[in-house]
Length: 607
Ligand code: F6R
Image 1 (spheres, protein in one colour):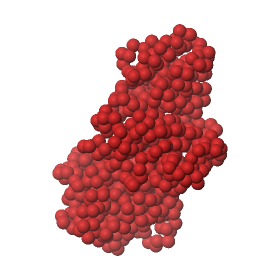
Image 2: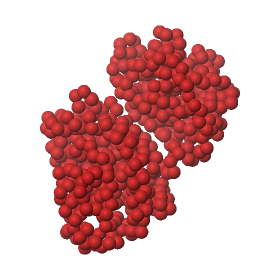
Image 3: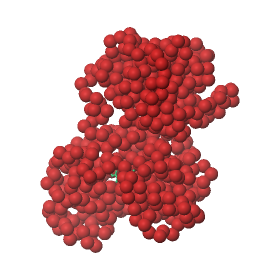
């Protein structure tokens, strides 16, 4: 998830672009860059790290008089977060520069094709491949719109791109497919950006671009074209009334809500380039040359720990890898039996959690191979792991983790698939259904989320007097019960316990009374009959039950919450957002500080 902005108008462009990038920094912040044309030359300036580093570089650059230009703030997907991989990227001739948000899935084969034609690359990014391809197409067609249409016709994957060219200063082109792009329409100036806050101080009139559309702007005009045919498309200008803060939240009331609603996109991004739709094979090139683990230890904290617990079920049943999942803060202070031949998977959104780091350092010192599964590129976990697999969820702003867990579950599914396929032990059913189901999930989830939110709203109001909740689940729903309880605790401050349903009769059943509601995860899987009898035990003791289950499941619950199901364990991807939304709606209804709950920090860098 990166941020892009383009400007053409009557003001010096670079300050406008830099200001816009500042408002897009929430989309990524590992490097940044700008491009503009000055005295017939295409100038590209880039810097590693925060935007302030680029600002310092620009201070040393005299006479920034260009009145058009573009910029990018990066959240790395391909290649390390270093200057050579920062955007904008140029073609070899320096005739075009391009910024990109998204993932070009077939970049490897395009790169090989271009290298065979003598193109020399200066970065490891998928974006430079598109810049070089565009330069070639421009040389062939002589016109930027035709060249962009031709180049984009060759790429698979997702993109929002913005382009400036040396020979047409003042004109910018942009196009999108599955990545956001909006145009801001001003007086004597026009804008292109990933998100409205980038240009909100200058104009509130926007045109939302759709997939397959291309925009052309200069200072005094704008036009939208069909990317494939270049036929003009009629668009409507919308007037926005949000302030900058609201706009950064994309119109959502809180970052947490926005991030819950981003989960369909997160699944798509995590899968991009990592599965072969035709053969159903997982392709985790990050692990090339590494044999499947003999034994696996997963280390993590909090929500990431719950993701790890969930992953254990698939890693054992699909890949037949003996797996244990450890709370990092416990593991590091034991004298764990770990050494050469062991593999440790450290899961961390931030990549900076002190206990997870200490646990993985200990395992590494004793000779284990460490694989990092993390979201923040260049973080300590990623730097100190032998291999790293990035979850590509984009920056998570809300303290309560939501979309990061969704991305971790997606990657754990792919890991089980990958290792199960490598070992040749993957159940035939998983091979047949997994990739197909994963690919259908974003669409299903997108359609379901608004319905889920309104049901979560109704139920949270019905139970807002409760001071304690029991969350129950069996099998892979057990880690989800833990996560549901954690989410409710951390943002609504209502006490909640997650329990394995079967353990209830070994103690917690003593707590059940009419004031102590149970939130049950009850999908129609093979464990459903067992969950059903647990819930009957709760009801027999006067306990109220909310059951997240499939329509017509015949459960005796006070409140049934119908949740659609997909194949096998992957129904989790629909159950998880329901739990997140219930906690969210409860906290919001109770007037709590949803995005920054008391006593918590986003990244726990202390022991
Ligand atoms: C809960 C939450 C925390 C984190 C935990 C680990 O919503 O966000 O429990 O999951 O602090 O953080 P990472 O994944 O950054 O290591």
